[in-house]
Length: 315
Image (cartoon, rainbow, N blue to C red):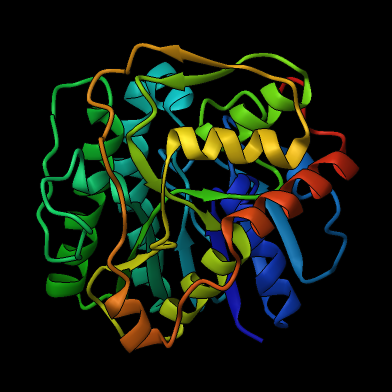
């Protein structure tokens, strides 16, 4: 049994990671300040191998018992959160990552940073390979998230090169599934909430901008494979199937049987025009590729969220 510490463990991705690690027989220490995470996401976990600690990792924190793996998932991750919490987002990427890396160093633990496709910004290379340096506006409103993650990547590699910490970095592309907050501002929970309540579905611009959507179960599998590998360089984990936002809206309307109309609104500042991962490295290094199609994943999300009573209500 390995002891895994998950920062941001009460969030959307963090809680799914906790579930999967426990199912594989590991002990899990879940750390979260509950700013954007929720105890509701982990309320179902009642096992002696699971421990929750309410901690803000912007402040130094310590763990007395041995730790084998640190999964650093903590950060505001949706536009509505990092635009509301710009300074905290930057502090989590800097101070929080420094503290998490220091903990991994003290315990000689494997360290995995949850990074993001946002490090590529509004990409001028398509699809995006890990070797692409990105096209980011560092002073734009989205820059607080993009640059926090880019700094976190630089800090992670510095700890590896100078301090000998066993680190790796996953660059996560758009992910969806149960436990996303209906009002978190991202496309899939927004479209599902609007469709199921009969509201107009709001599509920014003409809807021609593209995204690649990965179901959460596929993503978590890829992340754990990366943590268990010996890889140190960044690896893209996402679904390379590319859809326009208009196609996504039409698919949601079809699956929900909704009568919602599509309402177009102005594009946000620095909104990426296209986003699609090149997953060659994940396939070659980890033997990983996604298995759940967008339609199947959306259907599973709708069914699970309906059972949990989460869709159509405020987070």
